[in-house]
Image (cartoon, one colour):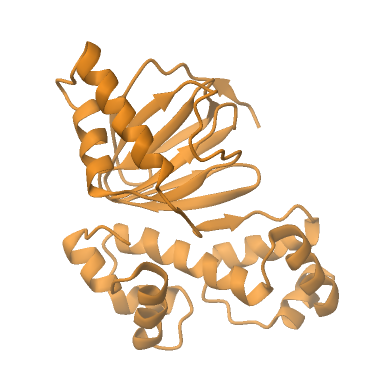
Length: 251
């Protein structure tokens, strides 16, 4: 993996086409990214984070990462010195973004951003809001064990694959017991939890691309559209149809 350094000098705003990718890079500053629309997927060697519009993702200084847009998107970001880390995070995290923080990012990354004292005051407001921003459980850990990686590749290629862990183990050359132990050790999740997270990540990207809810439910392996709607509601506090129609901020 080739990683380049990208220097950031203040707020940025960049439109991204569907499936557009920003390749591996790192910054010497901390970065707060708030996608304007669509879903932004942030990847590191340790995992990936699906970031819907009206949420944010904190990317600590020095962490190599890549981005991919799902649906037309817009990357809006603020940067802070490496020593300014209000949440003390050492890896990316998806954050609940308050309406006030969203407006501050919108103004600072806009076409005519404020300068001088006004910009400094707004950055302080952003930091104050960040200190109160809860981190959300939207991380999909990337396992290191080769057998788990092979299994993860199978399910990433087809999230609707309904094979049991024992059946998948036969495909990758490991027992169900071994894989179950490895999942908990390397991802902090059980296999069912990890697979559910994978399916939710995939569902967000398909919804951003405009796929119908019933089609997304089938493509991601839910037994019925109603089961998908309930799982999505539990995870995000709204239905997939409403999220897709309105671009509603997720809780």
